[in-house]
Image (cartoon, rainbow, N blue to C red; front, side, top):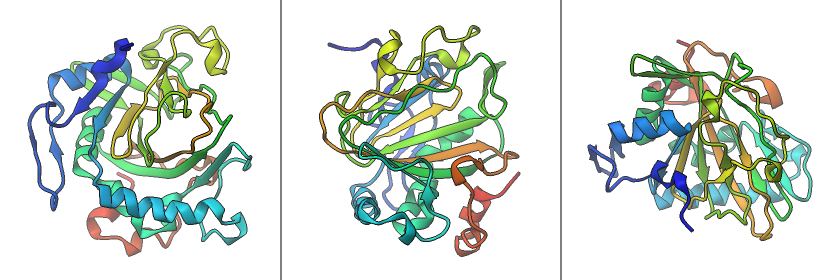
Length: 276
């Protein structure tokens, strides 16, 4: 059965002005339809924007961290949450392997981030979540009451998302696998959410299945979480989080770049990390 939110899904073959060049990457100018859908629903799915070679290299690195004890993580990697048989959350994953670097500045992603941020932006933090049978992310964030670090506004045709996240599935992830899920439009809600935090308690919740190579871009003000993993198949995702330019590193859950990270990057990537 088709869900009403499928219009937020965008195959780059049909999503407006774009240029394809594997050396330079995708260049996407968000068209009016995409802007409308992001503003309306709070998220957009871009299909097959990550090269297969990047996915393969990142998965090889994630394979190592899945079985590695926390005591062996290179600094500043750390557990962002207590590890359980159902979930593994590792903060600052981008510093764990150079395989994660290409995801930080994909042109198609940065073009969208620039459009929805409404001003200078920076890469604020990164993390990864592994999930197995029974794993779930409970719902969080909302339009009301306002959370200062995670706001969304639109005035005179200009969107302002103070924190915009990009979900990169490393494996195909369907609803039964515990995929990303949202309450569409909740980033603009003027009333507190009347339900609890469990996905099953929220009737408007919509699953957002995606495949390896896709990217889900959403404003952090959107109520989001996941479905419950009932299949037992592994879910593996990377999160790259871009803030308005003046926001410092997130800080919570140990999400802070190390002092050594920036200097080893290219000047363009250093600029992406810098405060504006």
